[in-house]
Amino acid sequence: MAKTPPLFGVFNQGEIPRIACFNKATAALGVDVDDLIAAMQEYVDKHVAPIWATPAKLFKSSGFVAGAWAMVFLDDADAPGALAYHDLTPDGLPQSKVFVKTTLANGDLVSVSASHELVEMLVDPAINMMTTGPDPKAVYAYESADPVEALSFNIRGIPMSDFITPAYFEVFRKPRSVRFDYMNKVKQPFEILAGGYQIVFKNGKWSQLFGSRAKKSAFAKEDRRGHRSEERTQRELRRADLNGIRAAERQASRASFGR
Image 1 (tube, one colour):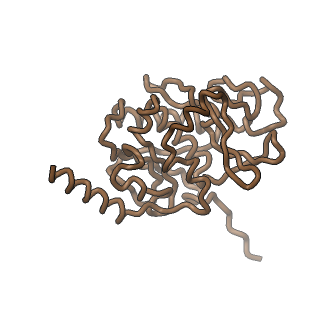
Image 2 (cartoon, rainbow, N blue to C red):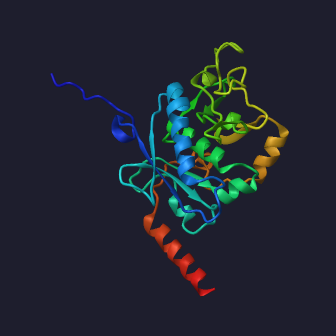
Image 3 (tube, rainbow, N blue to C red):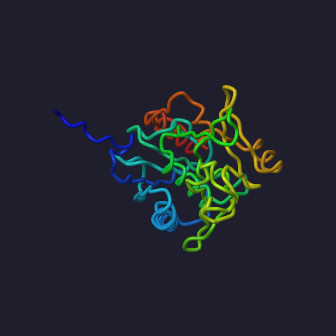
């Protein structure tokens, strides 16, 4: 009798993912790219992977690399070719987009936004994981940084995003019984801190729960285009359109040269 072959994850066939990090933003990141990648590698190795079992190897590149996941830094959703990056790499592998100008306009740090996107991509690469929770009529998105997104800690002097642990989604846990987030600020399952939020699906539609009125007000003013929260609402994830990206960049270059 033939043996059933082992079933691995949907991406990378059980291999440790390699993540190509490349900068297409014109705005200053506020941190050296090499230093940021080194800090994020330590963030994964020493903090995220021991808790979530999600190892990864980050490296600097000039663009997409065949067989690798991606993290791309863009100015904002209106940058040349930005919307053509869509949701996945050209190979159909996970990617994160960090909108630099948008991040800075929100008063946030690029390093915190990048590490936020990194941990969420590693925990839920297909942007489709959900779970039950305290509201029996709702399901909760498996986003590992949103509920604590205002908190950060330093690695090599560079701020990295706090993140929740698997126990956060275990509604049976007693308050203060285990560690619910890395910085140990969350006291019980599904708690949303003042600067955070949670994506939920209820009554056939997507919405957000907020940790405070101030967060709800700030969230409403943000440009959410290209965000994971928007990608999650789509029926399927789309691959980056290399032709669209290149055409937009050529057009922008010609316009810039003509000035």
